[in-house]
Length: 338
Image (cartoon, rainbow, N blue to C red; front, top):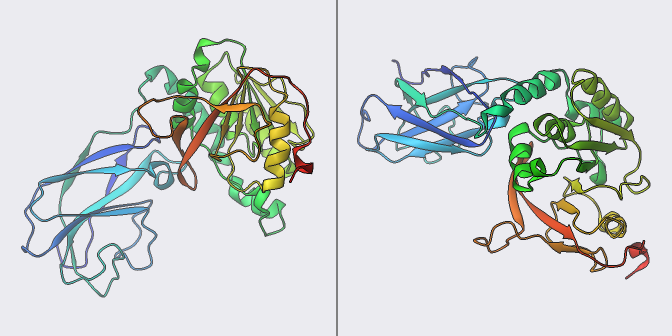
């Protein structure tokens, strides 16, 4: 091939999940000083990398026969699709910024490659639920709906983010919800209902309730629910600080943007949960010690034993799991405390 050319291969990805691809190179590096790279994009309608938003790109040391690329953002570059474009080739060593790939700083020579080791769920029984979830949400653009609903600006407490099926499946499996029929999961700030929909499809015995403040997102959630009649979903339009969710056995608050005052108010409501209820937060530290929550140990091998990692639409993030401990259940006005 001519320099500055690319070769694209459409890769069918079986699941939207964090995982690994085995990239095998069929030819040797054309020059000893060149560096090999692997990159991934959503489309193939460009000839050079100039101006392109590669979702990831990895440089590989010369002489390596292959590379295993750990993708922590798989679901982003195959968003609403089961296919992506993987490219690899050679990057001249004279390029000082191999990860930026300016078009005028290097020459590229694409070579043939193969891909193996697709992204697979450990539990094949969830195949049907997985496909139903992504088919139902292929019509929903939650980011645009949230942006428009907030008048073209974003309030921190209403910052929008999305959940994906496989990470939610793994999180709830870790919490062993499949072993307890009748559990109620409540998502605080449920947006278009992705988390509760994924949970309800993956775990049919689990009752799921989403509470969302923005009418546009709530309407989209209701429309999606209509496409998933088998899912046990309850969708509520309301304020998470005003609604009663003290009957929940699992509470999820997937936001890093709740202000401190709001977190204090939420923790006052956590004090009303039944002992043994679990709370999943993106915050490691609570605003007070009156919420009745204690870290729930999930993995003794970790320094922060109650932490798990989950992939959201904005990247991989740690979540922290707490358990409601046995103490007097009463509403405490934490917002009035210093």
